[in-house]
Length: 209
Length: 76
Image 1 (cartoon, chains in turn yellow, orange):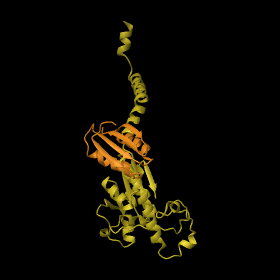
Image 2: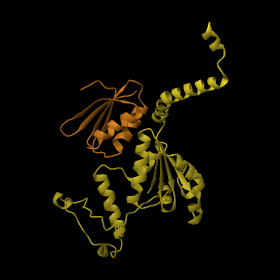
Image 3: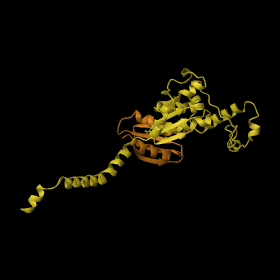
Image 4: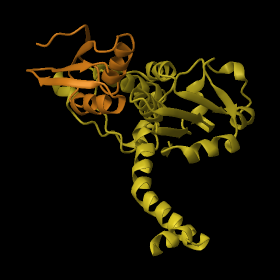
């Protein structure tokens, strides 16, 4: 019969076209689903570049990294410049009201009515009193412990425990004349920008603190 | 009060300590066991929900009692 002859004589060109159409059809159906699946199964990742070593700037990297790790993410902190201070063994972060005019602090001690007052001490006055930095630091630490917020050192320990990758910038270590021995043993790596950038590129979130 | 296997008290602790402690506690538990967490941190309501969603643990119930929040989490 005539159509059996047609079945035997399908040209290779027609075959190619049919295969192509079939593949396109399948891709259109399958691809979005597969992509979504890959997306959902991917572990979110966070990279943080920590560049500051004061107490107030120590909180954000440690809190974010430890929380990300608690959520099951891959978290990493690259400590550079003053951020290296956060990795020191004799770590003693201070906070300075100088240059921080938006720092109306409440007294963490004393009677309740005093604790509620917003004290707006002008910068010019604060920075001229010697030892004010130490006092500001002590007050900030007391405020944190009053409110049940972990100390920076505790948060650093929690990060290490949660296996956040702690990476130090080797260049800064050389620049400031530090030795690897000055830092805690838990530093995972001593690298440069070229090693860090590819990791940052792959991260879902990269923050500069 | 639901049945639970381990209890965790994070009263007086603020973000991110409640979920960090919860994570630590869950690590030592076996699958299907239930953890009861108490917290006073108002942020913990959303935090516990997000924590469970992200880690795949089941938040069976969350209560908002007089001065504390209570969460029941099943390790999955």
